[in-house]
Image (cartoon, rainbow, N blue to C red; front, side, top):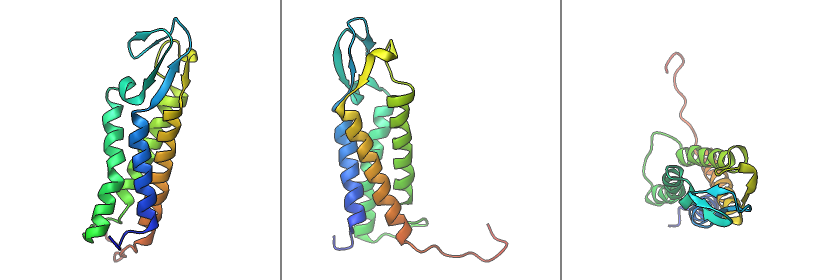
Length: 150
């Protein structure tokens, strides 16, 4: 455990926030005529209730920093820089959260669906995951290849 740095702890905190935020309220239908997650009327819904496929992807992405910490703690040898895969997954989580929160909000009409605090918690979690894992991948020196090789 002494191999873990602040970067892994920040990424794990981000994963925890992303996972917890997934089960908190993301959207609120503010009109009695709004339909969200199959419910008509004024109601709040979590990201888990609203997104049938994205919820599983975000849950896997929330677990990624803990796998990174396990790899670092056990000192496993990898063919890529440690933290690189977690950084890519956190970029995907950040982009997906922005898409479903800002660009294409679920429900009808979308103008009557407002964001709740759980979405912001999940977004903060993805940012923390990105920061911690990107800093971790930057610590690893990359091997240079001879010229002319792929």
